[in-house]
Amino acid sequence: MVVEGTRLADAVEGPWFKCRLFPEETPEGEGARGGRRMLSKMPHVIVGVKDLNHDPIQVGDITTGKMIEVDAGVIGRARWQITSDPQPLVPKRKPLGYWFTVRKVEVAS
Image (cartoon, rainbow, N blue to C red; front, side, top):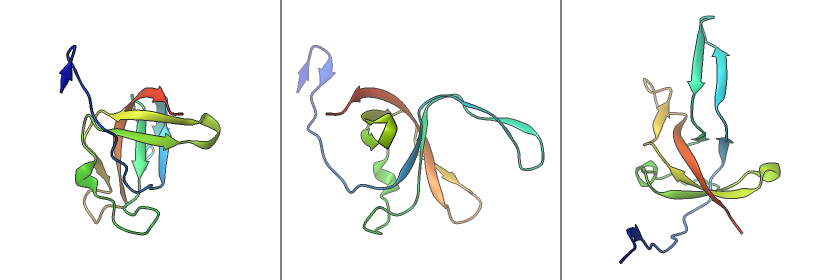
């Protein structure tokens, strides 16, 4: 259903998984070989490969436009829209996890 140019969608809950939220721009870091590099210019999330039940995270379900809810302890709980497809960490070998950029949508109740 479309109302005034926006789609209405029902929330679909999936399993919770551990993640690390970087809500602001990441500053330059020291590269592995001593070079300087910018890690990310946008808020982003890093996730592992398993959820809290130790089942594999369905990385194919993490796609641009979907929403995730992040409970970041002191920062609080909020909903974030995924703005990029997940990229593997250590892409030349078996991934240790994935990272993707996000945009804050609303504070969750």
